[in-house]
Image: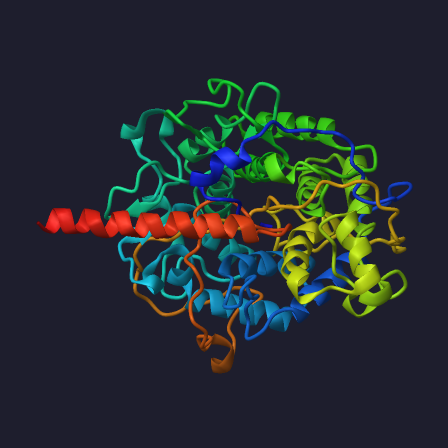
Length: 481
């Protein structure tokens, strides 16, 4: 999903281009079919097989905690691969600060709000205790990171905490949606948190990704000239607002309905969706997330069309060719599917397939984010089928939208690891042992890297991180002086 996150706010100018809705087919599929539980289970099984020691690796090795969380969400949506899911939940619980802070790199005093909110959500979705997850009360930490009444039009926004002046907050609509979802699932939901999310919706019905502009935070989407409306952000917001409506929040139901109406208007003729900026072309990440949101909003026909588009780029033993051994995996788009059928999934491309599958299968399972871990996916009497697509020109992949935010929780509330609810994430000591690999580069506060190749963006991001660390050190020295 899920949600891996997009680029850092510092790269926002690269991403913020106008949404293009040209109907570039995700795959050469025919008529729509109902959500296919068998296809979702196959995708879950393949994804579970990509885990090692309870984690999913990043593109350069090491543990990718954001992607691992996406994998837990995906497996929880189908209820499959319980041993892997439980082991992964145990690993994430044992590495909370590895995901929501820069502690592992010696940069202390920072807690990423979006990452904390995502941790709160995944703990609830996985059946763990979000108030005692790896010794952290994630609900209390998330509440402490919400902007207060003195923040004006930013009141209710999930923010990061830092001991240094780090400039504008990098939180976005994905982060806010996870905050709403996590708080709604773990107790009372503050109305201010919902209101801030609703203000990210433009009159057209779609949601912007970033609340901030070059001049600082803008009060609402409509007050930002030329705001880019984003399919992935809208799909996340619709599901969060539906959960908020169920929790009794005011204004949430109408905003969710208008968001779903906007999504219907963005769907391509073959059922697929594209994102915005570098993810504009039809891709399975955006299609899976939008299909899940449409199903949650009761747009069953459009959700079924999205599921069929996703199934069209899923490998099976029958259509997989050289990649038949990876049956169940879902390609980012038709071009990736065709390449794998011809030459198999290369080591270079495998990271993209993991990210695409983790989010795209949500469109097959069609269990809303607000109900994952509580509801099982619908069953279908017959498989939808995954005929080999006849690829048409497809946008070159970059990053896919989904949500795995790389933000960070606040300080711990010391206590033992949570008393998990069903299913229990309790695992053996070998499952929870910290993997012995060198930490990769610190997580970027931004959006999902789910889906397309991200090497170019990672290089730019690393330069930005390096510059940020230098500025932080210099700032600390000035204060010391």
